Image (tube, rainbow, N blue to C red; front, side, top):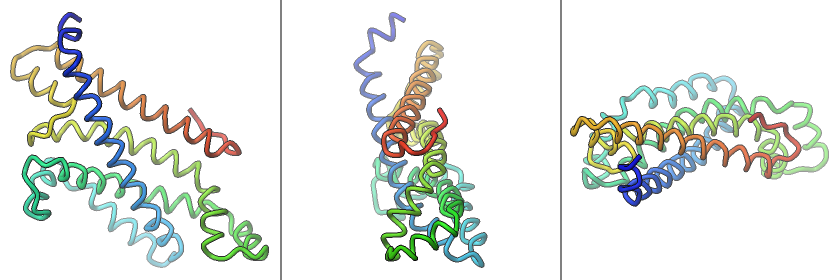
Length: 212
């Protein structure tokens, strides 16, 4: 524990960096997945193909995509933009299926009732479909946030610092304490994000039962 307190400022900086990159990538992936998932649900004949096509993106190895993105985006090899784009893509690839299932879970009778009540198409989407799909979307988002936190640590191998830096440095120096602290910090961060999302779900969807 002495090493932890002696290097607390560095660990805190890496923790905050890991937090904001993970949170931003998760948010971007979620925002991208919503319209794609809604569109796929609206077109049942190509729903399966659409979801499968997006899901293929998740099969690309993370280290490979981190290396391939700089020449494609025209960014520097060590740019955090590469990591954000890659993690957002992975998050969207997972969330599209969840979003499709979430919108598909809304009862057609409810949608017909909303249309009969005079709701326009946009009103029906934002005031009926999205709120009712909310619990399923939240469940998927919680899974994606944990996955993103874990996957970000791989970016350390291309020089983008985060909590994974504690792994590589500890391994290089054969210092297990640093490795264990890095693992613990990532677990704490994943649990923290999950708790915050669960809390947000309870505040934004008080009508729904959100599993902890």
